[in-house]
Length: 309
Image (tube, rainbow, N blue to C red; front, side, top):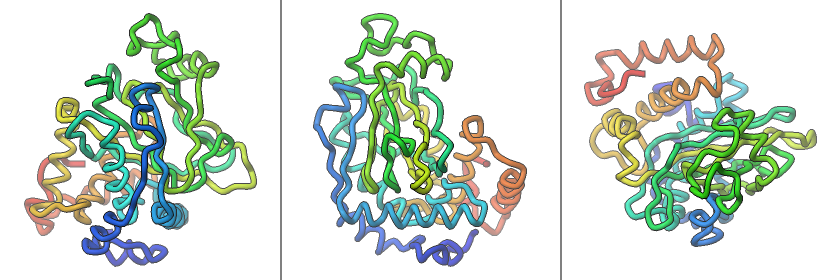
Protein backbone atom coordinates (compact mmCIF):
# COMPACT_ATOMS: atom_id res chain seq x y z
CA UNK A 1 0.00 0.00 0.00
CA UNK A 2 2.98 2.31 0.41
CA UNK A 3 3.92 1.73 -3.23
CA UNK A 4 2.17 3.91 -5.82
CA UNK A 5 2.47 1.03 -8.30
CA UNK A 6 -0.05 -0.96 -6.24
CA UNK A 7 -2.68 1.76 -6.63
CA UNK A 8 -1.85 2.37 -10.30
CA UNK A 9 -2.51 -1.32 -10.97
CA UNK A 10 -6.17 -0.90 -9.94
CA UNK A 11 -8.10 -0.44 -13.21
CA UNK A 12 -5.30 1.71 -14.61
CA UNK A 13 -5.75 4.63 -12.21
CA UNK A 14 -3.25 7.46 -11.66
CA UNK A 15 -1.46 7.83 -8.33
CA UNK A 16 0.97 10.63 -7.47
CA UNK A 17 1.39 11.75 -11.07
CA UNK A 18 1.69 15.46 -10.33
CA UNK A 19 2.02 16.58 -13.97
CA UNK A 20 -1.10 14.65 -15.03
CA UNK A 21 -3.09 15.93 -12.05
CA UNK A 22 -2.23 19.58 -12.57
CA UNK A 23 -3.03 19.35 -16.28
CA UNK A 24 -6.33 17.55 -15.67
CA UNK A 25 -7.54 20.07 -13.07
CA UNK A 26 -7.04 22.92 -15.53
CA UNK A 27 -9.21 21.12 -18.11
CA UNK A 28 -12.20 20.46 -15.83
CA UNK A 29 -15.06 22.98 -15.89
CA UNK A 30 -17.86 22.18 -13.43
CA UNK A 31 -20.38 25.00 -12.95
CA UNK A 32 -22.82 25.88 -10.17
CA UNK A 33 -26.50 25.87 -11.11
CA UNK A 34 -27.29 29.11 -9.29
CA UNK A 35 -25.12 31.84 -7.84
CA UNK A 36 -27.30 32.31 -4.75
CA UNK A 37 -29.18 29.03 -4.27
CA UNK A 38 -26.87 27.72 -1.54
CA UNK A 39 -27.41 30.88 0.53
CA UNK A 40 -31.14 31.06 -0.26
CA UNK A 41 -32.14 27.40 0.17
CA UNK A 42 -29.23 25.77 2.04
CA UNK A 43 -28.25 23.50 -0.86
CA UNK A 44 -27.54 23.55 -4.58
CA UNK A 45 -25.92 21.45 -7.27
CA UNK A 46 -22.93 21.60 -9.59
CA UNK A 47 -23.10 20.32 -13.14
CA UNK A 48 -19.95 18.52 -14.21
CA UNK A 49 -18.65 18.70 -17.75
CA UNK A 50 -17.85 15.64 -19.90
CA UNK A 51 -14.35 15.34 -18.47
CA UNK A 52 -15.75 15.39 -14.92
CA UNK A 53 -18.19 12.64 -15.90
CA UNK A 54 -15.38 10.53 -17.39
CA UNK A 55 -13.28 10.90 -14.23
CA UNK A 56 -16.30 10.05 -12.08
CA UNK A 57 -16.90 6.84 -14.02
CA UNK A 58 -13.24 5.88 -13.62
CA UNK A 59 -13.46 6.50 -9.88
CA UNK A 60 -16.65 4.42 -9.67
CA UNK A 61 -14.88 1.52 -11.41
CA UNK A 62 -12.00 1.89 -8.98
CA UNK A 63 -14.39 1.77 -5.99
CA UNK A 64 -15.88 -1.48 -7.32
CA UNK A 65 -12.36 -2.88 -7.70
CA UNK A 66 -11.55 -1.77 -4.15
CA UNK A 67 -14.67 -3.58 -2.92
CA UNK A 68 -13.37 -6.79 -4.51
CA UNK A 69 -10.18 -6.26 -2.49
CA UNK A 70 -12.37 -5.70 0.61
CA UNK A 71 -11.24 -2.09 0.89
CA UNK A 72 -13.79 0.64 1.73
CA UNK A 73 -14.81 3.21 -0.87
CA UNK A 74 -12.88 5.99 0.88
CA UNK A 75 -9.66 4.47 -0.47
CA UNK A 76 -10.68 6.13 -3.75
CA UNK A 77 -8.77 9.12 -2.38
CA UNK A 78 -5.55 7.23 -3.09
CA UNK A 79 -6.12 8.07 -6.77
CA UNK A 80 -5.30 11.30 -8.61
CA UNK A 81 -8.65 11.12 -10.43
CA UNK A 82 -10.47 11.69 -7.13
CA UNK A 83 -8.25 14.65 -6.25
CA UNK A 84 -8.80 16.17 -9.69
CA UNK A 85 -12.55 16.15 -9.02
CA UNK A 86 -11.98 17.58 -5.54
CA UNK A 87 -9.89 20.50 -6.75
CA UNK A 88 -12.13 21.34 -9.70
CA UNK A 89 -15.29 21.31 -7.58
CA UNK A 90 -13.58 23.22 -4.78
CA UNK A 91 -12.95 26.03 -7.25
CA UNK A 92 -16.53 25.91 -8.51
CA UNK A 93 -18.07 26.09 -5.04
CA UNK A 94 -15.80 28.94 -3.93
CA UNK A 95 -18.19 31.38 -5.61
CA UNK A 96 -20.98 30.19 -3.27
CA UNK A 97 -19.06 30.77 -0.01
CA UNK A 98 -17.51 33.73 1.78
CA UNK A 99 -14.01 34.72 0.70
CA UNK A 100 -10.98 32.49 1.28
CA UNK A 101 -12.92 29.25 1.83
CA UNK A 102 -10.72 26.24 1.12
CA UNK A 103 -10.47 22.47 1.39
CA UNK A 104 -10.23 21.25 4.98
CA UNK A 105 -9.50 17.57 4.14
CA UNK A 106 -12.69 16.28 5.75
CA UNK A 107 -13.21 13.54 3.16
CA UNK A 108 -15.27 10.36 2.78
CA UNK A 109 -16.75 8.09 0.10
CA UNK A 110 -19.67 5.64 -0.15
CA UNK A 111 -20.76 2.57 -2.06
CA UNK A 112 -24.47 2.01 -1.38
CA UNK A 113 -25.86 -1.18 -3.00
CA UNK A 114 -29.47 -1.89 -3.89
CA UNK A 115 -31.56 -2.41 -0.77
CA UNK A 116 -29.39 -0.12 1.37
CA UNK A 117 -29.49 3.60 2.09
CA UNK A 118 -27.16 6.47 2.89
CA UNK A 119 -26.47 7.97 6.29
CA UNK A 120 -29.38 9.04 8.50
CA UNK A 121 -30.54 12.65 8.92
CA UNK A 122 -28.01 15.01 10.45
CA UNK A 123 -26.23 18.35 10.11
CA UNK A 124 -22.53 18.47 9.29
CA UNK A 125 -21.98 21.50 11.53
CA UNK A 126 -24.41 22.75 14.15
CA UNK A 127 -24.92 26.51 14.12
CA UNK A 128 -22.72 26.99 11.09
CA UNK A 129 -21.72 30.70 10.93
CA UNK A 130 -23.19 32.78 8.09
CA UNK A 131 -21.39 35.73 6.45
CA UNK A 132 -23.27 37.91 3.97
CA UNK A 133 -25.93 35.21 3.84
CA UNK A 134 -23.41 32.50 2.85
CA UNK A 135 -22.41 29.52 5.03
CA UNK A 136 -18.82 29.39 6.27
CA UNK A 137 -18.75 25.59 5.93
CA UNK A 138 -20.09 23.50 3.08
CA UNK A 139 -20.01 19.85 2.04
CA UNK A 140 -19.37 19.05 -1.61
CA UNK A 141 -20.76 15.59 -2.46
CA UNK A 142 -19.61 14.35 -5.87
CA UNK A 143 -21.64 11.70 -7.69
CA UNK A 144 -19.52 8.97 -9.29
CA UNK A 145 -22.59 7.15 -10.64
CA UNK A 146 -26.09 8.36 -11.53
CA UNK A 147 -27.60 9.40 -8.19
CA UNK A 148 -31.37 9.71 -8.57
CA UNK A 149 -34.43 9.57 -6.30
CA UNK A 150 -34.48 5.77 -6.46
CA UNK A 151 -30.71 5.29 -6.18
CA UNK A 152 -30.04 6.88 -2.79
CA UNK A 153 -29.77 10.56 -3.68
CA UNK A 154 -29.36 13.18 -0.96
CA UNK A 155 -32.51 14.70 0.56
CA UNK A 156 -32.38 18.05 2.34
CA UNK A 157 -34.59 20.59 4.09
CA UNK A 158 -34.67 23.96 2.26
CA UNK A 159 -34.04 27.01 4.39
CA UNK A 160 -37.29 28.48 3.04
CA UNK A 161 -39.35 25.74 4.71
CA UNK A 162 -40.75 26.27 8.20
CA UNK A 163 -39.09 23.20 9.70
CA UNK A 164 -37.66 24.92 12.73
CA UNK A 165 -38.54 25.73 16.30
CA UNK A 166 -38.61 29.49 15.77
CA UNK A 167 -38.11 32.13 13.09
CA UNK A 168 -34.36 31.67 13.50
CA UNK A 169 -33.25 29.64 10.43
CA UNK A 170 -30.46 28.07 12.49
CA UNK A 171 -32.74 26.75 15.24
CA UNK A 172 -33.12 22.99 15.63
CA UNK A 173 -36.12 21.48 13.84
CA UNK A 174 -38.89 19.76 15.76
CA UNK A 175 -37.62 16.48 17.14
CA UNK A 176 -34.15 17.83 17.90
CA UNK A 177 -31.12 16.07 16.46
CA UNK A 178 -32.11 12.46 17.03
CA UNK A 179 -31.64 11.12 13.45
CA UNK A 180 -34.91 9.21 13.22
CA UNK A 181 -37.01 11.98 14.76
CA UNK A 182 -35.21 14.57 12.66
CA UNK A 183 -35.87 12.66 9.46
CA UNK A 184 -39.55 12.05 10.26
CA UNK A 185 -40.06 15.75 10.89
CA UNK A 186 -38.12 16.68 7.76
CA UNK A 187 -39.68 14.29 5.25
CA UNK A 188 -42.87 16.33 4.51
CA UNK A 189 -40.86 19.32 3.31
CA UNK A 190 -37.67 17.66 2.09
CA UNK A 191 -36.41 17.99 -1.48
CA UNK A 192 -34.10 15.70 -3.40
CA UNK A 193 -30.73 16.52 -4.97
CA UNK A 194 -30.39 14.20 -7.99
CA UNK A 195 -26.92 14.39 -9.56
CA UNK A 196 -25.32 12.91 -12.66
CA UNK A 197 -21.78 11.45 -12.67
CA UNK A 198 -19.20 14.18 -12.27
CA UNK A 199 -21.69 16.64 -10.83
CA UNK A 200 -22.10 17.46 -7.17
CA UNK A 201 -24.60 18.35 -4.48
CA UNK A 202 -23.57 21.10 -2.06
CA UNK A 203 -25.10 22.00 1.28
CA UNK A 204 -24.26 24.30 4.16
CA UNK A 205 -23.08 23.04 7.52
CA UNK A 206 -26.45 23.63 9.22
CA UNK A 207 -28.58 22.10 6.46
CA UNK A 208 -30.47 18.97 7.55
CA UNK A 209 -29.83 16.19 5.03
CA UNK A 210 -29.66 12.41 4.64
CA UNK A 211 -29.00 9.70 2.08
CA UNK A 212 -32.14 8.16 0.64
CA UNK A 213 -32.85 4.50 -0.03
CA UNK A 214 -31.51 2.59 -3.03
CA UNK A 215 -34.68 0.95 -4.39
CA UNK A 216 -33.75 0.40 -8.06
CA UNK A 217 -32.71 -3.22 -8.54
CA UNK A 218 -31.69 -2.67 -12.17
CA UNK A 219 -28.81 -0.34 -11.33
CA UNK A 220 -25.54 -1.02 -9.61
CA UNK A 221 -24.31 0.54 -6.40
CA UNK A 222 -24.66 4.25 -5.74
CA UNK A 223 -21.09 5.54 -5.47
CA UNK A 224 -20.00 9.00 -4.35
CA UNK A 225 -17.23 10.90 -2.64
CA UNK A 226 -17.37 14.04 -0.54
CA UNK A 227 -15.15 16.72 0.92
CA UNK A 228 -15.73 19.91 2.87
CA UNK A 229 -14.57 23.50 2.55
CA UNK A 230 -14.32 26.05 5.35
CA UNK A 231 -13.59 29.73 5.74
CA UNK A 232 -10.62 30.70 7.95
CA UNK A 233 -13.04 31.58 10.77
CA UNK A 234 -14.70 28.16 10.63
CA UNK A 235 -11.43 26.30 9.98
CA UNK A 236 -10.50 26.19 13.66
CA UNK A 237 -12.20 22.82 14.13
CA UNK A 238 -10.23 21.49 11.17
CA UNK A 239 -6.80 22.98 11.82
CA UNK A 240 -5.38 19.80 13.35
CA UNK A 241 -6.38 17.69 10.34
CA UNK A 242 -5.16 20.27 7.81
CA UNK A 243 -1.86 20.67 9.67
CA UNK A 244 -1.41 16.91 9.81
CA UNK A 245 -1.95 16.45 6.06
CA UNK A 246 0.60 19.15 5.30
CA UNK A 247 3.07 17.63 7.76
CA UNK A 248 2.60 14.12 6.39
CA UNK A 249 3.15 15.37 2.83
CA UNK A 250 6.27 17.29 3.76
CA UNK A 251 7.43 20.38 1.83
CA UNK A 252 5.99 21.06 -1.59
CA UNK A 253 2.39 19.93 -1.11
CA UNK A 254 0.68 20.66 -4.44
CA UNK A 255 -2.80 19.75 -5.66
CA UNK A 256 -2.99 16.53 -3.64
CA UNK A 257 -1.30 15.04 -0.58
CA UNK A 258 1.64 12.66 -0.91
CA UNK A 259 1.07 8.91 -1.08
CA UNK A 260 1.74 8.44 2.64
CA UNK A 261 -0.43 11.43 3.54
CA UNK A 262 -3.32 10.07 1.49
CA UNK A 263 -3.10 6.71 3.19
CA UNK A 264 -2.91 8.21 6.66
CA UNK A 265 -5.79 10.59 5.93
CA UNK A 266 -7.98 7.72 4.71
CA UNK A 267 -7.23 5.78 7.90
CA UNK A 268 -7.91 8.84 10.03
CA UNK A 269 -11.30 9.39 8.37
CA UNK A 270 -12.29 5.72 8.72
CA UNK A 271 -11.68 6.02 12.46
CA UNK A 272 -13.39 9.41 12.66
CA UNK A 273 -16.60 8.20 10.98
CA UNK A 274 -16.65 4.74 12.54
CA UNK A 275 -19.83 5.61 14.47
CA UNK A 276 -21.70 6.10 11.19
CA UNK A 277 -19.88 3.36 9.25
CA UNK A 278 -18.63 0.72 11.67
CA UNK A 279 -15.29 -1.02 11.17
CA UNK A 280 -15.45 -4.79 10.89
CA UNK A 281 -12.74 -6.96 12.43
CA UNK A 282 -10.84 -7.41 9.17
CA UNK A 283 -10.76 -3.67 8.46
CA UNK A 284 -9.76 -2.88 12.04
CA UNK A 285 -6.91 -5.37 11.71
CA UNK A 286 -5.80 -3.70 8.46
CA UNK A 287 -5.83 -0.25 10.06
CA UNK A 288 -3.85 -1.57 13.03
CA UNK A 289 -1.23 -2.99 10.68
CA UNK A 290 -1.01 0.33 8.86
CA UNK A 291 -0.53 2.14 12.17
CA UNK A 292 2.50 -0.07 12.79
CA UNK A 293 3.87 0.87 9.36
CA UNK A 294 3.28 4.56 10.03
CA UNK A 295 5.40 4.37 13.18
CA UNK A 296 8.46 3.07 11.35
CA UNK A 297 11.49 5.31 11.72
CA UNK A 298 12.50 4.91 8.07
CA UNK A 299 9.35 6.69 6.89
CA UNK A 300 10.93 9.98 7.91
CA UNK A 301 10.15 12.68 10.46
CA UNK A 302 7.89 14.74 8.19
CA UNK A 303 5.82 11.70 7.28
CA UNK A 304 5.27 10.71 10.92
CA UNK A 305 4.51 14.19 12.24
CA UNK A 306 1.44 15.42 14.05
CA UNK A 307 -1.61 13.13 14.30
CA UNK A 308 -1.14 9.41 15.01
CA UNK A 309 -3.94 7.42 13.43
